[in-house]
Image 1 (spheres, helix red, strand yellow):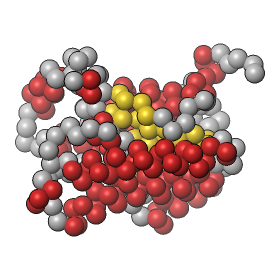
Image 2 (image 1 turned 120 degrees about the horizontal axis):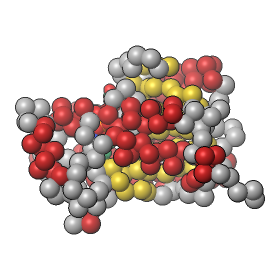
Image 3 (image 1 turned 90 degrees about the vertical axis):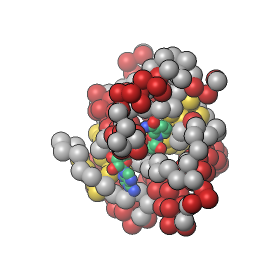
Length: 247
Ligand SMILES: NC(=O)c1ccc[n+]([C@@H]2O[C@H](COP(=O)([O-])OP(=O)(O)OC[C@H]3O[C@@H](n4cnc5c(N)ncnc54)[C@H](O)[C@@H]3O)[C@@H](O)[C@H]2O)c1
């Protein structure tokens, strides 16, 4: 096999990538790095991101995800990289949780990943890379109130492994990133009312690497998983948490 240069290993020129939840937070961080690497990028979100090819998508709705894939193929001709990043992290003790709360969390975080994986893999005729965004909560709870979230994210990890096995013969790789705390709009919303600077300071004190994560900390790992630098990896999880799980 001819060895590629480092530039080639991270080059996404002539590749098409979808990023769900790409309008803000971690998703937008990934969009920016993929664009820099030369990819055609499709932002799939409930809210529009100006300046990008955008397809309004609710990842929990089957018809929306099918429409997203169709629009991507119409516009760019193929799909090479699918990032299933859209997710919600509402907090409520399980004892106070009604069915609607549970179902909504599962629908966006777990059904959304299933639909994104299934529909993307159908059209990845020349192989591809699927990246699911799980969480450190895919393996270990980070706080009470997140039982539904943790169940959904454990599900994402289980699904990732089995699906990786299923589509490996098609040369489609499926991996998961497990972020720890990352400074995003979603986290700011969750902490509504709290002083974000203070929240970040307190959280950073519990992180072995001494700081809160930024979207680009996740985006650079997504770039690695998207390109050929990771071509022998499938069914793997990469924890990106500044060392939090070590404690
Ligand atoms: N931020 C963190 O600390 C953290 C930690 C671990 C894992 N994660 C995971 O990373 C992912 C992104 O988190 P974030 O912090 O960037 O969130 P965020 O709330 O800042 O951004 C999420 C994006 O997803 C979109 N979205 C929400 N529901 C959607 C739906 N049904 N269909 C399509 N788009 C939808 C939102 O509009 C938004 O643009 C999530 O899966 C989350 O669970 C985040």
